[in-house]
Length: 251
Length: 85
Image (cartoon, rainbow over all chains, first blue to last red; front, top):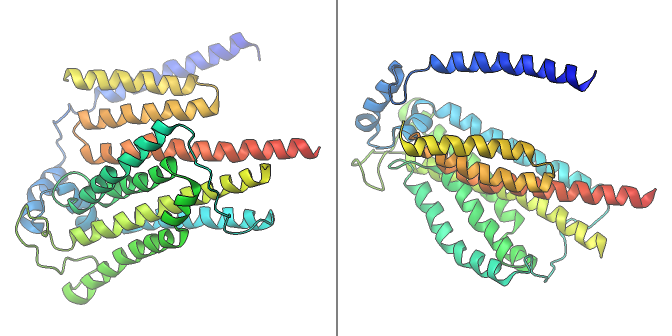
């Protein structure tokens, strides 16, 4: 196929796609002009029913709690899959399972290392803040969990492999992932025992706007936060170990 | 549509195009990180702060880091394969 014919085929397809896209986008409701019924119901029932101001959090953890539980286990399974795959490969290459600690700094630039070290604390605090305020403000377990993951990842960027080995024990991350995933399921079971159905709230909702309010929402957020942080760190940690092994192979 | 939303939309369009046109995979990972941040700004401008919060970390940090680490592994393996032959 000559390049001219290829461009003609591409052009026809692109033109068709553009026409369909513009046609479809023109039919969308305007920004902020949502006409769906459920959005209206959710926005108005979240605060009185759950004493939580973030209706998104109420929706994901209460009205659609099962959905979130399954999503959490998708991430859990993905992390376990990466772990198993990379470890099998490692066994084939006949190298020690736990790489020996290397004292060499990961980053040569001193400014990068000091900036990274200075940011670890604030980002850690921000992550915890986002997790525990999930039922009050935008954010929650997933968002806070990924931020916490970044804070621990910064230790790697700022420090050396040695520090990371001490501060990023793979075992503790696996535990965090497992405890988070199991915690969500167990809180759901608590609903079965104490309130009658799975993931039904069984804790006094408290007063609107307080840090401890919204019933089981803060607990579910913390469980998801632990799970997300652990899962992402396990995946990144496995990849980093591969990198360490390769460095050793090169030397 | 406000000016912030218009600017965010243009930034996302330019960023996405830049990701496609960056040919070197390592460079592409870095460009996609900037694209991730512009996407987070877009979500924030269109009043989806929850999505913006996850996007800013996943798109700007986690995904590029994962790509870089994978690239490192693939390149190293290619080197080993070439050395054996």
